[in-house]
Image 1 (spheres, rainbow, N blue to C red):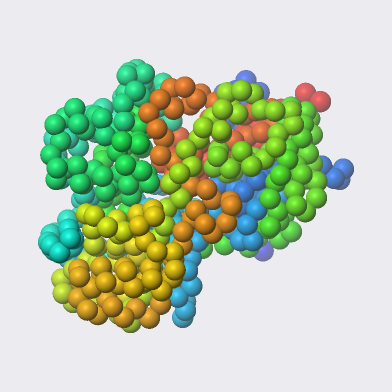
Image 2 (tube, helix red, strand yellow):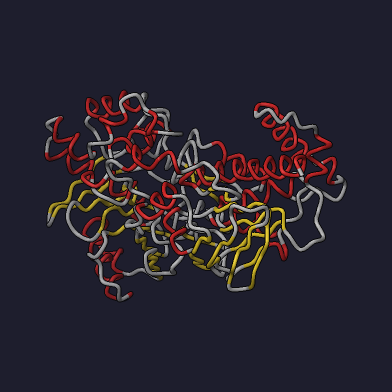
Length: 495
């Protein structure tokens, strides 16, 4: 973030804090760097070689860019394949300053990295609306129930999962004491061994599908436990609204964070600039071949989903472990999210919270996504892959009929409809979340984070906490910037 008009860059508190962190981290690593040495290493270069090239203009990449600026590093570029910033966050413009989020949107207790970023960017927050009853639909049967703590009501099963999660570090689940045994099982297999009831099976099917984009049978137990570990070893906190990870929304939608960070980058941000080939990642200077020419850099931060790295040619080829991790990374959970806009949130008058759970059918979950003042009624929906027509009018009509069954005939008449199928909008998403299958982490996890030559791996998937979330992206961005700064300093001291 740039300094204010009354504060020189050398006096910027953000810069001082980052340089202090750099110095502390360097001492731990045996480098014993001084602030002066760090400042010298961050001087701009005139040889056409950037200090850092950042691949990806989502939350992780832009957070890294912001940290580099705060540290006084001006020699970098952000290379974004799309024609916009935000990555897997994107706002539908509903008019009159109202938006509805098409991608990631919620934060909750413990997600301090993104909460701090929002405060620094002066982005406000407001609580998710959940007052009232949730509607469950099964064929022609409709049940209204007061549910605020997530879909899994079996406290014994949830307690067992929470206890198991204490032994699975979110930073490196493959290092858990019993990782090999846990990673052999899917969540579905573990639930079967617990003698789960049909009712509980429905709850877990829905919750795992919403959180991870797959069924319990497709989700590795080790990964599931690592995610619970991230949320203070509380599945209730991971899946809940009140006191949970879905408790809070951003005023202006989640994409506003990226838009604000991008505003200060100027020509350092290069949109519609996909990286096609990376040459010499094992050398002092790396060449990135993009649709807008060749860019040369001393360090490269790859702030993208590991599966997207398969769209880049690496010369020389990456080491086998890292290459296999990317090749086998699960990318089959693109997610599809729809928006129905009404003149007002009429369901609230009926004591309903707008949440609709369809046990069988195209809808997984609908929820109230209205603006803070309730000036419009907005129902967003997660839909099951392949079960909703792609024709916009047919999709809108199908979901409107489901909403009418749950909320009343007013739902038949939306004034706007929006549909975001992340698997079809562009070639740069592939998957919104990564449902790690059994056996993956214990075989390939050790290759996720360590740098490969001049390549620093970032993106939410690499976060120590809340991997896969917006908070995880911000954490990964901070870490990657610090790694790049340390590498630059170390490289110049040894030159």
